[in-house]
Image (cartoon, rainbow, N blue to C red; front, side, top):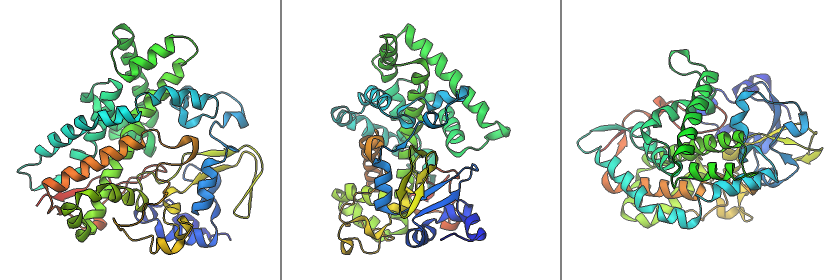
Length: 404
């Protein structure tokens, strides 16, 4: 099936971004492995059914390092691609192993008191305010402070990180027409200066440990250091910003479940999982390329073809469970829903390294917010909310809330 040109243009449009789920439903039913031209002009395949999506994410025949297929050298901006997200084994295992040291279960458990402290401090600032933009004043600062403390970079520079992160993820120019390229150069310069400081005076933070590994020999190259740290800064807060924002918005649209969560805080874990499934903070997987000819969904994917998984489409697939009767009405929010094997954090070897941290931050943030402000409501009509553009994250730019 080929969508008409008019329908094709609607994919990735602002209208689609506001509510992509009807389009996803149609694609799952009519053309689950759909050839499409993505916003950057590349022709590729969009995978929307759960079974296909899970299989693609786990299939080693889909690779992340396109230079293996196309050869050639990448430009200087490729320092941001020298990380585990865009690498394949054996490099992937080595890079992930280095970063994993900061995200062990013991380390995450030990961070609970600090995350609670940051949450409480941010919520203290809302006292006496009638309306708050929860993205700027809560959902963004919480995870960026946490990841800055893990890495050892100054949290006072968090607004810079936000500008650079938005520019890279959304592919948009910033204020005064500053280009994505300029923002990336600023980010590179910042990291270079910080690495120089750490080399002179290392601490007990992750960047210090990564630099020590780099200087120990064949563990980490200079470009890999830039790539890994930039990934951790960006991915280390973006997922949680939108997890918190999307969860709050969903609860405000379902006040009965918001109230239920207030009186039954033990449901916070299932509520976060349901939010991740219903309206996950990462819309699409990062790019993969077929290393050989592969059959999926009745389509022949040729060697070198680009393949992207629509994670949120897969998470609404009624066939997510082996027993579909347990998954009635996947478009509905239900904090009592049986836990699903959603793909919000991916699957396979590229499963999100920071998933346990994001879950902890999300649970702590929403639980704290509801305890302090159980009567909060949306301060503007929902249709006035602006969804962020781009092919990666799903979240609103601002979330004005009456604190009640």
